[in-house]
Image 1: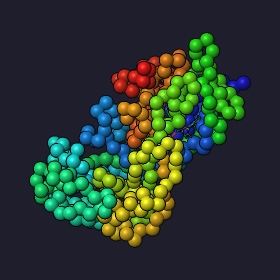
Image 2: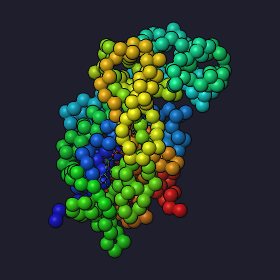
Image 3: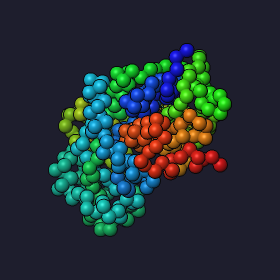
Image 4: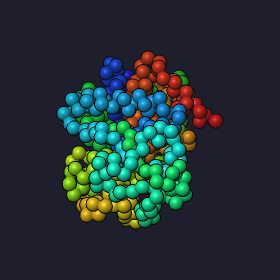
Length: 379
Ligand SMILES: Cc1cc2nc3c(=O)[nH]c(=O)nc-3n(C[C@H](O)[C@H](O)[C@H](O)COP(=O)(O)OP(=O)(O)OC[C@H]3O[C@@H](n4cnc5c(N)ncnc54)[C@H](O)[C@@H]3O)c2cc1C
């Protein structure tokens, strides 16, 4: 029977990027996937690479910053190895502030005045904080407006930030992994991680078993379902809508408001997100919710009223009790975990792959992974 150095459970962006990194370090790798690789959260995501201070949990900031910096090279390598385009965009983000952000000193410097906003993104509705902001049910809370230091201060801020098309990214990562001779087993869930003499020896699936001295759980929202460790991951549903803009150049920047975000792709699609719902493993969309997202998008960019609706979908983010990922070795020798990336798994894929490949192959890592240790949930 064939043996691998490492078995990766789950072929989302985390499992795929890690598999590639492990192959670069000379390990033989098998990815075991329940369905088809890349079809869950990683394809459902918006693809904003958000690493700014006021939106990222403090403990995650060092990894988020490094990962955001790694992105151009990460994408370049995937594009070269897959011969596919991934649509990494660096036009930046226009941020409409909520009350929790409004006092942040870094943002004061990034404030946009109406004329600047019109120049940057002419299609956007022209607003200042002393105007009523009509987003129907998604309206900006009047209290938030009252929080503004000065009633005429602009609500919009420009931040440097990239975005990527997660479906294209995941498809490219799958192709690149195959290019690196990563092996795959699809349509067969892992049910348990096997041990002998207190060490990992492989995995059992519904159809067979595979052998390896090291196994890493990258099963996203489902990570907690695989024995022997019940990692406290849970699905956090997000519904999304895709519009076709009337012109490819309608929007240049990502626009992020408290109740909705718009992410333009280079081919003229505009992704509208999202919800954050505790709905178990239910991936159905809801007509009322999708309509509300559409109305909120139109309130920001009126020309989207006549945009064609291409599709809607929902995905399941891997949430954790403290909203931080779970990264590192487990209490079982040879068994590792990289999951719980919640709203930032696309952003964090490059750094997760790098640090976990180091931990698995060299048992070392230059970053402090203590805040992410699975041991924090041991009791
Ligand atoms: C609506 C939405 C919007 C988002 N927007 C952003 C964003 O803008 N920026 C950002 O950085 N992140 C975003 N995210 C978060 C990001 O998508 C996730 O954090 C990331 O995709 C997690 O990747 P993953 O590989 O861990 O999980 P997944 O992509 O879910 O992959 C896990 C894989 O494991 C497989 N699996 C499960 N159980 C088993 C088993 N027993 N055996 C074998 N395989 C198994 C699954 O089938 C799946 O393919 C968003 C997520 C959603 C849902």
